[in-house]
Image 1 (cartoon, rainbow, N blue to C red):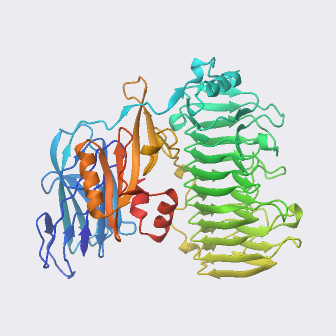
Image 2: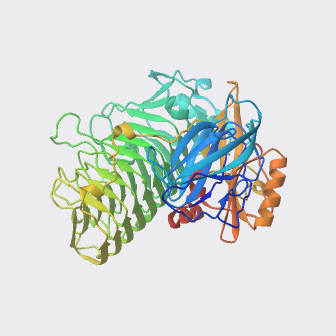
Image 3: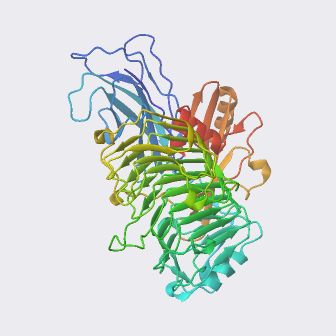
Amino acid sequence: MRLALPLSALALLALSACDPLSDAGGSPSAGETSGTERTLSLAVTSVTLTSPPANASVHGTVTLQARAEGPIQNIEFFRGTPPGTYLGRATLLDGVGTYSWNTDGLPRGAIDVFAKAWDAPAGQPANEWRSASVRLNLVSGTGWSPLSVMSVADPMNHGAVGNGTTDDLAALTATVNALPASGGIVYLPPGKSFRKTNLLTVTKNHVKFWAPNRQADINATVNGTRRRQSILCRGNTGCGFFGLKFRSDATERFDALEDNQISIDHASDVEVVGVEVTNSAATGLFFYGSQRHHVEGNYIHHTWADHIHHTQGATQSWVWDNFLFNEAPGTNELPHRGDDGIACVTYGVTSPRCGSMEWWNNAMLGSDWGRGYAVIGGDDIDIHHNWAIGVAGAGVIVASEGGYNSSSSQNITVRGNWITRGAHTIGHPGILVSGGNPAAEPLTHLRLNDNVSANNVSGQNYRAEGAYTDVVNTGLSQDVNALPSPLPTTASVRLRDTSILKTRDVSFVASASQRGLYRIHVRRNPSGTGFQQRFEYVVKGTAADMQSFLSARQAAGDTVVGSRLVGTSTYAVLLSPTPLTVPSTLSGVSFRALRAGDNDGSLRWLWALL
């Protein structure tokens, strides 16, 4: 058994540390201890603390991360001198255990932290254990500076009432207009409900609507009238929604662009994070001819149409960690409420197809109509590790449909998904490949790998029909016992934390400080007055160049969240209260590179830190 323990800092911290240890033989080295072997002999070579550097200064919430090799299922974390004060336990995922440790209230100064790995599950007799320790310095730094790179506008300062009954549309419009041409934040203060009775159209670039963790909502009153509900981002770049709650009085399904809660019309670089949509006359999120969307950690439910819909050539969309749910408003009679969960649809066989997408780690928790994950005319889409539970039709469908004259699809991957209890209203299997439009080309280059489709109401778990070529389905399990347990429910819903606004839109800083800048963070000043900022850099380079850079930045008071050697490059995450000039010897790590590394496993640790 071999244990490697990188300790990394996250969120408000200023970074944990590590102390490299080595052992040429089988006995524990300095900083490493072992338990008594009883019946099982394991090859133990060393305990290695790999990242970040020793004696780092930390504060706030620190992420402790341990890597282990061997028959290990749990890692426990402690502080102080062994046996120490127990902090918590982490289950290993891909050999890594992570635990968030809140250091608030502890005395400032040096403190030892150690991790202990066992060869048995919790509560079972252990044959052997190993531990590794590191010394950290608890400090009182904040790691933040007063917000200077972005403007903030509050609707309450532009005529809004925020009582949920007065029409605040004019005030919301005035708030957007009050931001400079470079954009900024529309901040919705706690406890306010902003009613609007018509469209709010945003054409200004880089406008971010922010209501931390649903502390405020926007309430659309349509009163049975079409084309009134949406916040519509049109022809701009950098439109964003963070933490808002959207409500509506819709009582029937509408179908225009303006009838969705959030509509993105030929815009780019869109972020929708930690948002709740409860009721919509049409879809929750609608992407129309737009590109580069980040849709992360939302809860979209009780819509009258799809939850998340792409069409008209919308491309480059990353959709992850979302919860989707719909149900009939009391009966199972028409009209049905809701439709597809996440969809890419191309109407017309010669129309530009939507595509270049990744949908993963989403949970469709039930629907009264529609399918779960639907590609009805799309290219180059990776659909993986999603749940589809109790969906009216197929949990996953790739199809062309004659009724809508929809286009064909190619290069679609469906892997590692879990589908069950589906097809309760529509006669589909759990997974359906259907080339049903005779005017469209055959579906082609489809790869379905290692999915579980079981216990569907129709009695069918997979079917391919119509016009298709080069469709390969391998590793399909139809055993309900192959589903992970427990199944997610509405009680499992967790939205992305938006107490800190984290935007990938780095246009607010000078170009000289954009190398490696991954996100800008903004939060309310804990004092209650004003806002604060910090800057998240993700960089890579040679070990020597990275060590020089990180040492200099730590000496300046910045926070190294984590670093690790991968192949010939060292990767690191750094938090700074001010924008930095990253040396040319280092390069930034793009979102696409992070996704590729998460998928192949090489940067999964780094993706988890972010």
